[in-house]
Image (tube, rainbow, N blue to C red; front, side):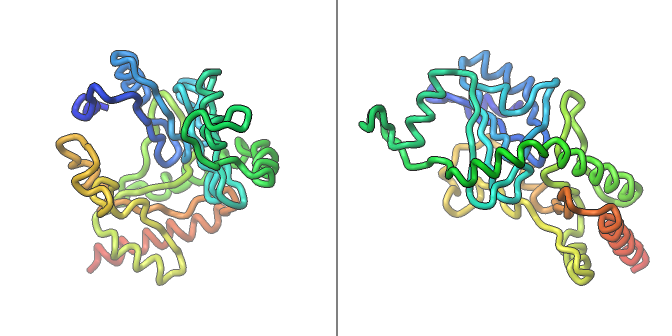
Length: 257
């Protein structure tokens, strides 16, 4: 948030706050910046279904909340799906127009698109929504287990913001010797992931085209260290133990060598 001033221009209309990995962005600082500059706040809660900030659900704090419901999300459909939340009736009407050709009475008033949520996906999501908090509690239990078991190793584990909670869409650790650890885990049939291997501003499509803050040092440093460990509601504590035991074994071997 301290770098928002660097990318703010007279053309800026909104700030998109990305709630990454399962918990909120620094909303106090971002909200203050938006209010000071009369900007809309759009929450990207695609990795934080059900999480809260100061007791409020993410996606209900900004002017708009955007959720991906891709199958791997905490609230996932069986295909591509997503939804938008708002308390603003004007924005609600505009979003409904944008999702269906910009129509009013089947006439395009504004440029729109064909982006309606399929009824089958909606029906599945309505049922799965009832179990979201239960599934999130299972993720939290697994995350606490990981944090406890990985303490004492040369690993940085996720830290929770004091004013919010995390629903651990992903459990991301930071390590120095990433590829060695990934290779070792793969040999043990444990498939950890890397979200994300390259920051967006360095992708070929956006290189030197995407306005960014002057220095993106932290982003560029972190992408070389992050590993996502397996975490999902159906993962048993026994299987999570296998993951942490093998990580411990790796560091025992690494230190000895």
